[in-house]
Amino acid sequence: MASHKIVKLAGAQPTNEFELTVAQTLVDLENNVPELKADLRPLTITAAKEVDVGAGKKAIVIFVPVPQLKAFRKLQQRLTRELEKKFSDRHVVFVSQRRILAKPSRRSNPKQPRPRSRTLTAVHDAILEDLAYPSEIVGKRIRVKVDGTKTIKAFLDPKDATSLEYKLDTFSAVYKKLTGKAVVFEFPAAADLF
Image (cartoon, rainbow, N blue to C red; front, side, top):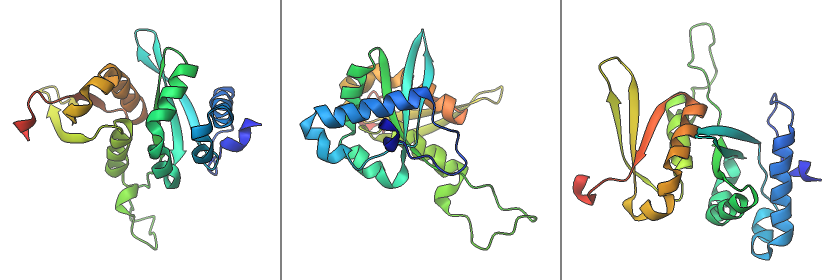
């Protein structure tokens, strides 16, 4: 029943039990919440993952197709709230399913140049934006320590501090799991920093 909500890309792993439960929850929300029904009906997901956040907590990462990202964002706050009620004690995050194309080399001579949006840097930046979505990233710094480790500091819009404060560790853990890069989300102390 819920499998029509999951649209896999070619070559992707088959649907697992967890993805089916997430899809079933979306179908239940579509049927039971009249305000969401019209908006949720055409939307699909590509995958869902459970990520360990630490301290025994888990987060749910729901991957959505890039063309549907705009439609998901319209109802993302409401949908996140409803899904966090259903999956108690877990944070829910929406990330678009983007593709990274390899850097063209001498051996692979593509007929077209690689679009900027398919580069590793662009995809990682877009994931960062997706994670922090209801808020905006107002500043970004990359700190390189003496031993060579890099940490990204992402400054979020201070007006969203009350609504997102409790999720910052989740954002960092999910970003680390998806990209392998360490990131720290903060709210700038003073707005005049920028």
